[in-house]
Amino acid sequence: MTKILLIDDDEGFNEALSRSLTYEGYSVIRAFNGVEGCEVMRTERPDLIITDIVMPERDGLGVLKDLGLKMSNGDIVFPCKVIVITGGGRLLGPDYLERVEAMGVDAVLEKPFSLTDLVEVVERLVPQNA
Image 1 (cartoon, rainbow, N blue to C red):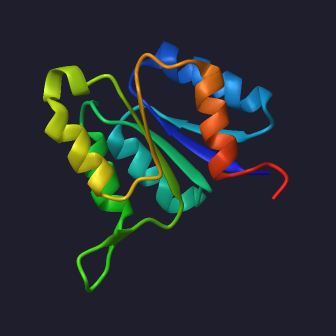
Image 2: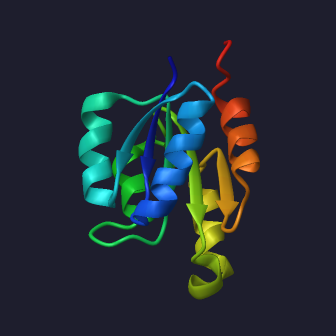
């Protein structure tokens, strides 16, 4: 079963995404801040990480930096697929999202998005029948 680590500090939003992905047949591990998410990803080895950007204790950029393996040419390679979700682009400016995308994440979803949109992106990145 495909294992997804979901990192988002909004408990209601985290729960809704978790239920939707579980319904679709994915195993979901939940974390509620970047520090907790980084601890979980070291022990659980997920196939996909979905992380919010604006969070307390460690933001999504910190999570991505901890997760990424920096190559000799300066590129960052992630050991699994990564989806970034954010509503902070409005507050943090377009250059913030550009920096996130430049890090090499697999997808960026800006809130609000539909659960159908999320499931479609997840299925594209980590198909259940692969």
